[in-house]
Image 1: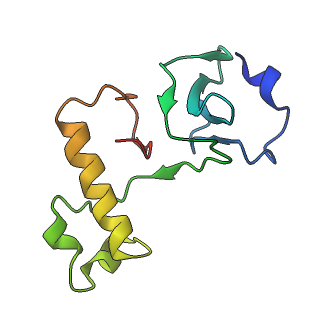
Image 2 (image 1 turned 120 degrees about the vertical axis):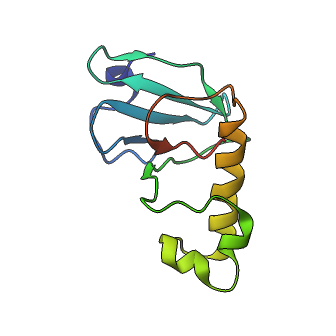
Image 3 (image 1 turned 90 degrees about the vertical axis):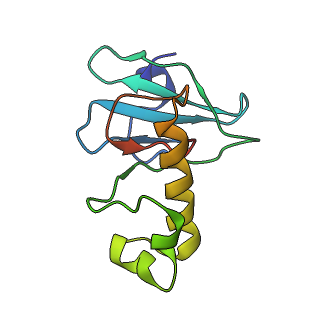
Length: 117
């Protein structure tokens, strides 16, 4: 799979580039996963990330600069200080961080929240 075969423009809700433009993440509706594509080589650079049934969009979000490291830091409105929209989003981040720090197989080697960790 290559980026040119997927979509020629940024308006496709099924893909989103990283802020540095080095990679594009593509939601694969029928295979229920997300592909990671290197924009320089125009090739898939990592194993597909399983995400569940029929993904219909993808959004890349840079990690917060001042990261919470445990769920307690997400309580009592403190999730707002980290820039999350709600407490659940903060807790989801902490869970992903903990899973990533324990050797998650989907480590992409970049500085973006892949949503699957």
